[in-house]
Length: 392
Image (cartoon, rainbow, N blue to C red; front, side, top):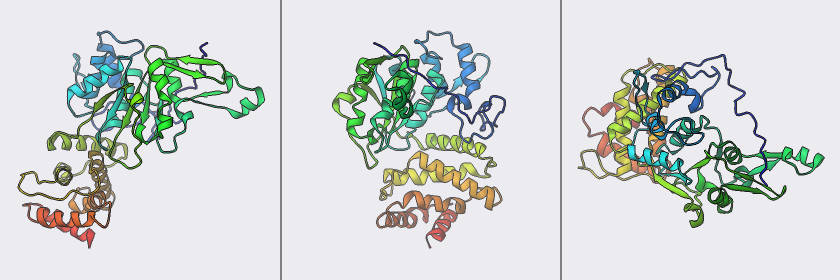
């Protein structure tokens, strides 16, 4: 017997329907409360989603807000017939996004796999926002994630007072997504203990979640699916069982293919974050962003951009996400303790912190790179001096 699941309101208590926040540069008005530091994707890009829906005349899967093609346009960017510009949310191969969107329209769950910093979480949030209009049905995977987080829990006050019943059931995000026909998200699936991971097998294969305490079950309605993210580079990874992995269609997200792509990603996200934090646009920001990206790519790939010099790679991943963090920190320093111009002195500490994760080995790698590459590169003397001053 199926049981109707009580679903609490999905609206955030911190969102005011009458207040509006200043959107990041190039983004439409979010229409969310001014106190919200980071609006959900469906709020921050509500105008774009509405414009896409108004022009979307293609077939939509059951309970999808947009057609698969419109979802891909929302993620990758484009222009609508009325001139509305849809900003790119993900810079990468188009086919990767198309396969991910198509997977969600089938009965297969989607696993976004990639090294840290390849925008797995970012892409999963925007896919959920475009498909379901709700990216908040989220389970954050950790080593301590219990099975209840993927299934359901209990209101123990009601349980003790009235005994087992649906009123005492506290549905988790996955259960709510099943009952409402929405997308659920499971972040860092491989950080969850293996026995807890496998609680998803019945959900993904049978599209049913048994509730043995009540002698009932919840059957997923059309529109339900699940997006999981995982990487195999960080410590604390639990391999997926073969049975669980077969329930997913795996899409591997690559690192940015070129320096230009990575610079575009960093510049766009720094602009959005800077707008949300009320930081003024940095003078000479483009030049310094390209230098940060160049340092990260060379150390990550073990060779300089001209291919002439081999360099050692540090223990960290030096991801695009870390480059965004370094530049945003530098932008804050320039705004609050400088004249607003982003300079190497604003970036040096962040660069060193990103590279030198293991003081015993990474410090040697960093100093060798400074001496053999940065010091000898034309026009980089100011960056070399700033990094040396930080390390002194």
